[in-house]
Amino acid sequence: MAESVSNNTGKKLIRIDVSSDTVCPWCFVGKRNLDKAIAASKDRFDFEINWHPFFLNPSAPKEGVNKLDFYREKFGSRAEGILARMTEIFKGLGLEYNMSGLTGNTLDSHRLINFAGQQGLDKQHKLAEELFLGYFTQAKYVGDREFLLECAQKVGVEGAAKFLEDPNNGVKEVNEELEKYSAHITGVPFYVINGKQKLSGGQPPEVFQKAFEVSAK
Image 1 (cartoon, rainbow, N blue to C red):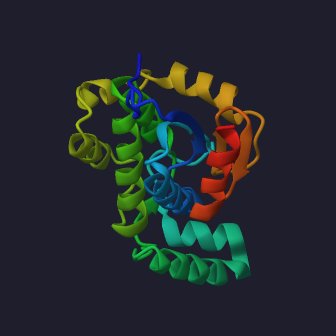
Image 2 (cartoon, rainbow, N blue to C red):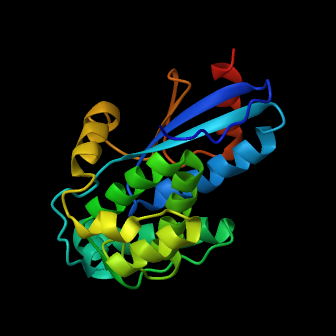
């Protein structure tokens, strides 16, 4: 059973289910804002965060395609404006938005996130950060085995190499999570707080904080 990121402190527990894809920029923005909201609220609440898979492009090739070309093909004349906006948003978070490298199939990253969660939700949350950081700011590819193992090692996920070696490992679990948490939604990020408060998109920290207050009542 996965460990909780909370302690037996007598504080109210806030459980957060996050549906996300590892190539979704708003999911990274949302995570950074969620982290800020948690940091500002941890004197009052304990938190348990569980990451669930979503596929923005289920048929994306495993070998990866040029990220910039993909965006231009997908968004056409709107692409440059979207990229400029994301660059500004990332700059506001102290990050440099990097459009170099490849994008593609995210199944392996979701398999690894699920595997990390079995070793502790704190590890899972840290792994999500490393995957986002590498993909969006360092031109790393989430389908690259070496990058996935590098992230796993950074956050202390054990047995990742052996787990990822078999392409069937974790697929059943990912599909079950998709069905349970993401079948009813059309976009990410999507958050369910204590099973009742629902938020979508890269919300600012204060929106998360208000949701914590409401869901704790």
